[in-house]
Structure formats: structure tokens, C-alpha cells
Image (cartoon, rainbow, N blue to C red; front, side, top):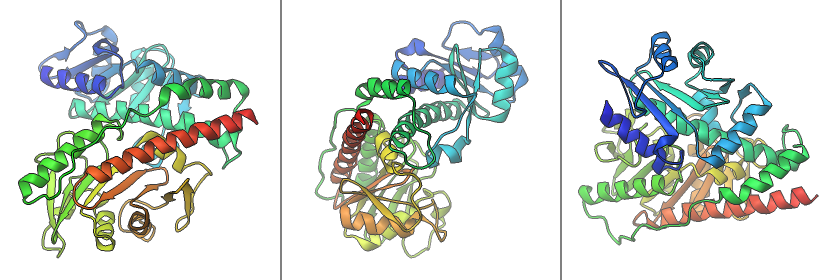
Length: 381
């Protein structure tokens, strides 16, 4: 259990969710409650007794995120995400006044995590610490996206988002400079991936680059590679920075049942490969790409809009009538990448993941610059 605590404490810090190892206290129940905090406070012991859990994270996010979250929490007792992924994952995030076992337990009986005004974010796992880590990351992501998305849409009168008051505009203008994406990095170009071992190494490298560049929420997203009539694709729920052992080999003739464990977006990958000559696909959740994809309000299925020349399409996960497998592949074929509204970015590459990664990173930086320009124009007006 102590190894798990050390692992996820390091992930919280590495992914920029906390500032330093003292920014979070992790607790795991085995034969006793283990922690990195030195002691287990009485309130935490009470939470373990009130809830059917085996792990708990109490974290104060890094200053920018905490500033955003405290502003949202000051406006409402419930924070309602606006991006598709967060809405699917936990619907809303309760806000609690202080770290008292009773109110926190009531909030956690309803949702996977909550915001505690005088403390930070509290999340739990019923099976392992990974669950608590995922919820922690997802609350940070959802809050960031909501704060900046609501401000821009409200400022420009898009959708049903109310126009922000001058203090909110000033706060967004103040924080936007601190919210720039990480500097671009690159994956070494590979001219040919000859065998399965090379493909898995390349996918692992690409996954680590996506997580390390903070182009995904937690580690959500997916990666695939086509070699002939075989698609190698990350499994649903897999950690993109820990892919070996979590990659499915899916024959295109339907002779395997791997579709059961493969990414839920397998069909979108298959259809994209059918339309293009590309062999590598990356999907991440870059923050400003998601934010800009929602600028203008809801995008009806079948319609398309653009952030500059970057296409934005709509679509649901899966193979249904409104599945993104119908809208995404043509957009990727034409532009080499596209953003699914409220969801995330897909890019493709001809041979290796290098081009796909560079394109995904470029799209995020361009979306940030586009957001900043629209915000300044709206604020000036």
C-alpha cells in the first residue's frame, strides 16, 4: 500500500496537479491506514468508518488551479462541468464548507469527489488509489475547462451562458497568462515499425509523451497503430503512461473478441484508417482544444465549425447513429486532425506517431492563442 501511495503522490506532482509532495495527503486501507502524511487525523479515520472505501486523497491543487476552483466554489454549492467527458464521469461536483467528516461523507456518498472550501479536493477509491487519483485529476480538468469556457461563451453571448460580471472578466484576464500549454516537445520520427515489439514501444513512448506534455486529462485518451490488417489499440481505461500489457491486437476481419476490452473509440479509429493512408492515431484531451471546441454553444450532430482552420465536429462515443465514427474520420482525412466538441482532439500520422503528436500539440497551442485573442477582444468591448 505504501508503494501505491508513493506512486500516485508522484503522479499528482508530475502532472502539475499539486505543488510539491506536501500538496496532498494520500490514505490507503489495508490491515491499517497507511499515509504519506505521518499521522492519520481523526476526521479521516471517521470517513473510512462512514464510507465503503479503501483509499482517500486530500489535496490542495497548485495555485492556478486552486484559484480557479475557489472562484467557482464561491459562486455555487455545486459545480457543474460543461465538457462531455466530465459530465459522463461524475455529472457535478459538490462543494463543502470545511473538512468535517459528516458533510464530507454525505457529499462522497453522492459523488466520487468533492471540493472542501478551506482545504482542497477530497476523492476516494473503493478498490484502489488509482480511482481516487483519476477523480482528482478529472475535477481539476473539469474546473479549468468550465472556468475559461463559461467566461468566453458568456462574454460573446454564446449559448445560454450568462455574461460574466467585470470582476470575473478581470480574473480570467489575470489568469490566462498563467494557463499557457507546456512548451512543445517532440517524439523522434521513425520511418518504419517492422514488428509488434517495435509498435508497442512506439505506442508506449507516445503515451508517455502525451501524459508528460499534459495533453490528456489524468491519462484518459487512446492510441492506435495499423499494420496491414491488424490494429494495435490501447485498452479502455488504460494508463497512457503505462501501456505495455494494455494494448489489444485487433484483426480487421472481426476474428477476435478484443473489441470488448479495446478503447470505446475503436470504431472511430477503424473508420479513420479506412479513409486515410495513415497508420498512427493519437487522441488526447488538451484543455484549450476542448474549451475552444465549445465556443459558440452546442454543435448539432452533422454540422462542423472551425477554430481557424482546425475542424470541430460533434459525435458520441460508440457506434450509434450519432457516433463520432460518422463525423470524425472525414475531418481527419481532410485536415490530419480534428476536435470533437466538448471531448478532445484526434490526429493521425503517416508512419509513426511523430507527426500526429506534433499536430496535436500544435492544435492545442493554436487554440490557446485563439482563446486569448477572443478574450481580449471581448474584454475590450
